[in-house]
Image (cartoon, rainbow, N blue to C red; front, side, top):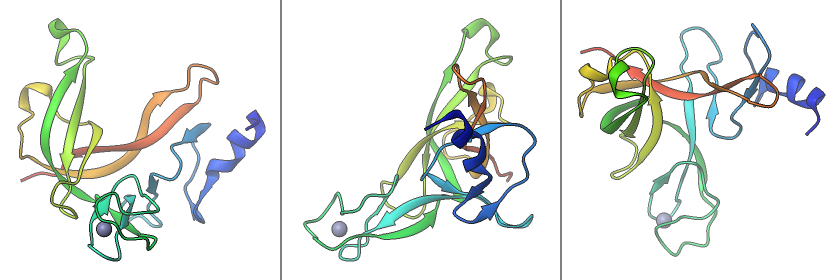
Length: 159
Ligand SMILES: [Zn+2]
């Protein structure tokens, strides 16, 4: 993909518009953006038409059963709970520059879990079982282009 394509393509994701503050690249095929201000981002998963198993990222065929039927696309992951987590970064500055990386359990599947950065939560206050909500924002910057990488992450959703 050329540099020009990378700059212009993310402005519309699946027909949904988001205002651009700066140049960025988008993790494609993993989530949909909110369509209006009261809407929320969702992850793009797949559901088996035979056994109902939900997978993320989406798969064409069910990873669980022998169904030959193609899965259907489902939007999931608006809410989740912290199943496990780890803290990335130098331990002596744990509450400053470190990143909390979570394994988030989603309600759409019995053993459906996604790995995602957790923002807005002090590593000292992270607790398994805490309620989380999906958000989309900068997760990294591309070392080659310098553009922000926009991806999905979770944050505490309150009591
Ligand atoms: Zn299945």
